[in-house]
Amino acid sequence: MAGPELARAVLDAAKARRESAAKNRRRSVVGGDGGGERRLRGYSGPGPDPRDPQPLGVVLERLMKARGWQQPAAEATVFGAWEKVVGAEIAQHSRPVKLEDGELTVEARSTAWATQLRLLAASLLKRIAGEVGHNVVRKLHIHGPAAPSWSRGPRRVRGRGPRDTYG
Image 1 (tube, rainbow, N blue to C red):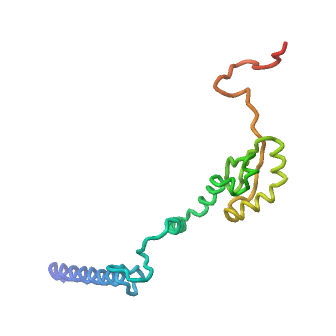
Image 2 (image 1 turned 45 degrees about the vertical axis):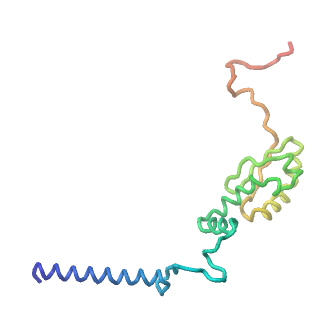
Image 3 (image 1 turned 90 degrees about the vertical axis):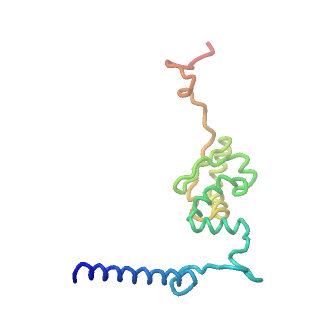
């Protein structure tokens, strides 16, 4: 083939490809075997339709499932609804601090409550699993209140620090 004949053959092949792609695109939009979604137009009719207004909870649930946000949402529920998850009395004397790799760190208001929560750890895990889902929290770390630190802080003075001040 010479130059002009070769150019004509390439041009014809490109046109044929473009036309077949346009046919496939039209077929998928209208709802043919292309596997695409059908584009709805006009009046929806008396029955339910995907274009009808949806409750916000349904839309959020669909969005969370599509984006894969179920696990982060369940983890946030542990912190946001702590009182609902563990009960009012326990929530009054404790708070969740950190959740990493399925291990929840809980800080109790006193050492006595920390001991009590350690004894209730198994039932707390069951309650959390029942409320937010399984495998969100697999292990509990419970500790008492943090004691004040004399060695760190904005008003730290080098030296021996507070020793015997009664003398």
